[in-house]
Amino acid sequence: MNPDTAPTATAEPQTATGRVPVRAATSADAEGIVRMRSAHVLSQPLGEEWIGRCADELAPRLSPAGDARAFIVDAPDGTMAACALGLVHPMLPAPAHPRGLVARVHVVATHPDFRRRGYARAVVTALLDHLADVEGVTLFEVHAGVEAQPLYRELGFTGSPALMRMTRLEPTTTVGTPDSRPAWLPPEQYAETVPQATAFACVYFTDEDDRPLQLHSVYSPAHPWQLAGGTMDHGERPFETAVRECREETGLTVAGPPRLLAAVYGLPGAQWPYSSIGMVFDGGRLTAAQIRGIILDPQEHDEVRVLPLAEWKALMPARDFARLSAVSEARRTGEAAYFGTWDWGNE
Image 1 (spheres, rainbow, N blue to C red):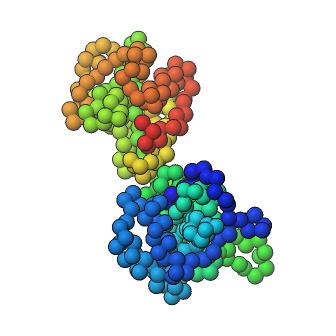
Image 2: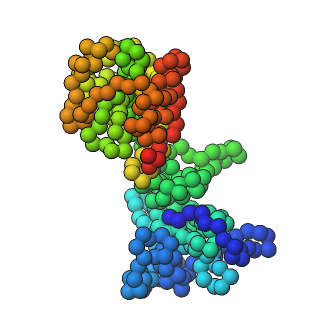
Image 3: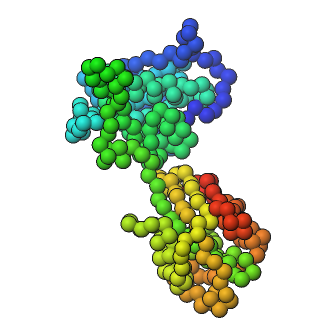
């Protein structure tokens, strides 16, 4: 889904009220929509044969009896400035989906000459409103690019870019209750609409001179030096994960009670479709003998190193060093840190 991101000096379509003039598409718009998708959405544009085949497929589906709905902003020269195409599919009915319909936002495209004008928002909003208010669709899905996520979140979608979802229900009305509110979703359906995340937990060790200890990864060139730790298993609490992972990766057993040094959060990206939530616990100061006794899992790490904090900077990506610095400062001050920029794709 391409966002309105590029500046332009081309004349801007507007109505007399200053609104973007959006119209419903007809079967005659099928080829134009396919060409917009080919030129401005797909990584590899379609050849003329496939453009013709796709247009022939889409045209009857844009009829009132078909399963496709689209909205368009026309450019002054009669071509398309922007379009949004949705495909409606049947599903089993449920209290939150009484008509048994789900709509997938299949194409959102804006010509480069007309970006940064809100046209994508206008056509998507018109599409969602029509499907919800006129055709009774309550469940919407979209595969969103990273740049387009903010728009869809503003419109009510949640979840990862790989699959964002939104449920729109009409308020249930009860006689004599003018302030009636929307119906509550069943828990399992509501769970499908909230963001998903992977969780991890780590242990921060230093030597007796407060120099950070890290492990060298054999599998992650993007994060070559790591704290002992890993991803949470089902049924585990964060500190339990930290203790287990530390034991598996180093042979060391961390004793409680847990002392939290930092909370870490990252948004999803192209490399991983879920957010990341992590906690870093204080493992204390290790003696030289304890450090020499560390037993590494060769499938994960091949070296243990202890260095003054400043010397780690040259060995790590900037973001990794920033997290390590925040954890080190938390240990020094006794105040837990919040590191909220552990985003996927920001190496």
